[in-house]
Length: 140
Image 1: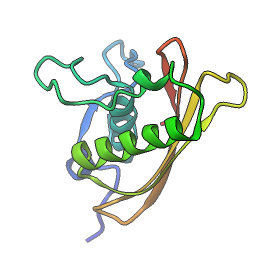
Image 2: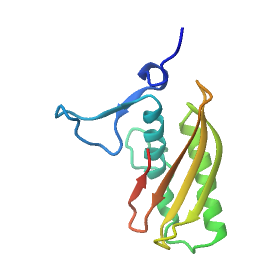
Image 3: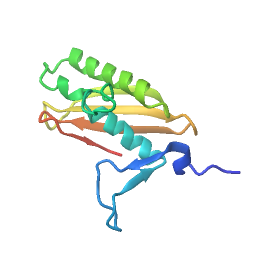
């Protein structure tokens, strides 16, 4: 018996991130490995306290954006990402996190996350850029 790694039963499913309309006019959903990626992006771009039912959920990256652009700040960002993923995303084993200054916008930070899907052992990587205006973009 083979396991379909895109199966929603293996990794879950949820509304796509960013939210968008599906071709049938309803909300677009993500499942499988894509759902895991989108959930990590959502986690990183959510501020603790933003979710009423889960006030501790989130990473709070935006609070660092007006700090000095230093190695120390980048290290704090990396540590916050590691802590949030380890706490809130049990479907992955975290392999590494790096935070670097964005080459095009000096006040933006690029966060790269390397992880392994626990159920299949598949290595994955994603990058999220958090801009100085508080917006973020992920690469699911």
